[in-house]
Image: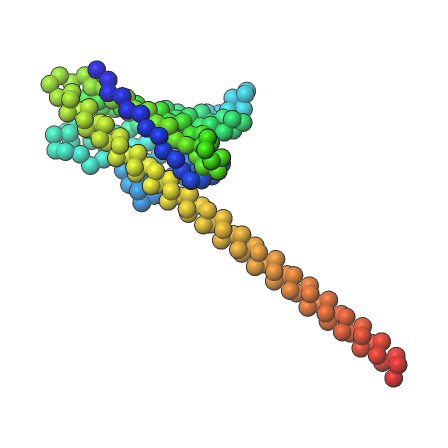
Length: 206
């Protein structure tokens, strides 16, 4: 038997910003359960879509009965980015511990229909177990972990987005200050040259 969960979230940042932040999510203070993240394959398809394959090692706090069944796990994640239609779809599932529990997740990142400056995330999750006698406990544990990780993921996204936007704002301020400084130099130089010219003309009448 498979347990199914459907959810939707909104990030108040543009799709381009979320796409850029997606590849820089880890490490972050809200995603400490992600131990490693490695891109093992990447290609651009003939129709200009970006395909990526990642391997992630992660761990979660869990009840004692589950510690023997679920030590640090390895997850496989494929992503398809369609820049023309501004969508990114990810498929993630666990590679090891498949007998106790298989957790699968599908996420679609797209432009929010109510606000084009926001990004909508549609999530689907499937949890199944082949263990007899404890499958209900495994399902409940898997769904609880999914909900917890969704919250961590959103907080992590917001943290990275704020960091990236803060860096962008800082660079803009530095650039503006530099341009203002250069403009002030040009103005001062022009004023000096004008003063010299006026002084030279004044001497002609002496």
